[in-house]
Amino acid sequence: MYMIESKGGAISCMLLALLFLGTWPAIMTLTERRGRLPQHTYLDYTITNLLAAVIIAVTLGQIGPSRPNFITQLSQDNWQSVMFAMAGGIVLSLGNLATQYAWAFVGLSVTEVITASTTVVIGTTLNYFLDDRINRAEVLFPGVACFLIAVCFGSAVHKSNAADNKSKLQGFKRLKNDSQQTTSSFQIETGPADSGLAKGKAKEGTAAYLIELEKQRAIKVFGKSTIIGLAITFFAGICFSLFSPAFNLATNDQWHTLKHGVPKLNVYTAFFYFSISAFVLALILNIRFLYWPILGLPKSSFRAYLNDWNGRGWSFLAGFLCGFGNGLQFMGGQAAGYAAADAVQALPLVSTFWGILLFGEYRRSSRRTYVLLISMLFMFIVAVAVLMASSGHRK
Image 1 (cartoon, rainbow, N blue to C red):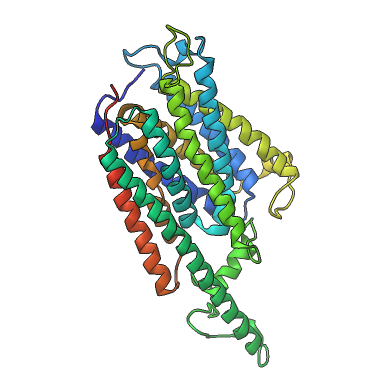
Image 2: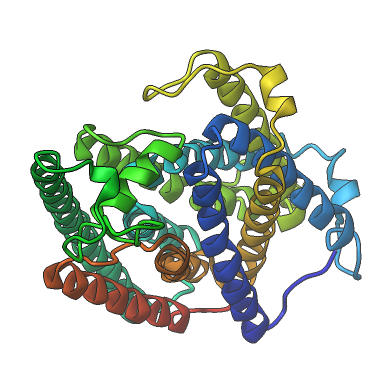
């Protein structure tokens, strides 16, 4: 099997994982905003997510002089470590499933900030002690503190942006009522800059744009409490904070559960079992959600899913990006410590870029929202740099 030997190689894996893991949520959000049911999207995503793990296992897990390789370990008596790997896959699958709904309620950028920060605060602390403190605590924990500050900024951004949107919609409603006294609202040539009522496609960030988006998207959010979105988001963050420590236990056996003489699971075998359990759980839950949907989504069926090719290619791409991103994160973590590998939880830097570029998030928002958004991103930049600087080297 192929092993990352250098600190530079480990950091390269983390940076590439950061790009992949920050991009796939934007793709999933894109399909939902275009009206594709999240159950359909997630079923496609989970297929290629598993396929990515299989590709990594049968290639990198088989090449190189290091032993034991992937195929050899499938027949070894290592079920205790396999259980840890599969537990990690289960909580990751739950977290990913929850965030798919949270993106609609809270927005891509803030959802990723809160989940990533929760992951770092809880998960990185657990990994630090599991890794026998190979990361420098005097560097690591200030980075964790930066993430904790960022989650506070993220919550404030969400609250401020929600207030901005509410104000836009109220202004739009007043303007529409006034216009109906003299002419049809569909004949209005001009209006206030933030109303979006000018002829043509609604401008991003305007009230008209928000209304058009609500009509088109799969998950309807108007009239729903923001508490629902935040609750889903924090639940996802707690799930994410547990999957990396579980994977750490699977590959390093800190609790000495394996029998004497049985080799520890290599990162590729652990990732294979990890992805198998994530796939099975996602399959069960999403097939159930087809027939008994949540959050007011329309019912579907397995036949309807098979016939839904609108956005399927994007969903497959999201699964590949997430699968390869997780694999790279674990490869880097095995070499430099899983606490440092949690630096990929700075993926909101990438997701926010896509959110602003593709979806116009925070367009025409208040100055207060922009100040909070910049503060949040600044803390993330500091946090990822500090976490990577804490990298150690596993003996």
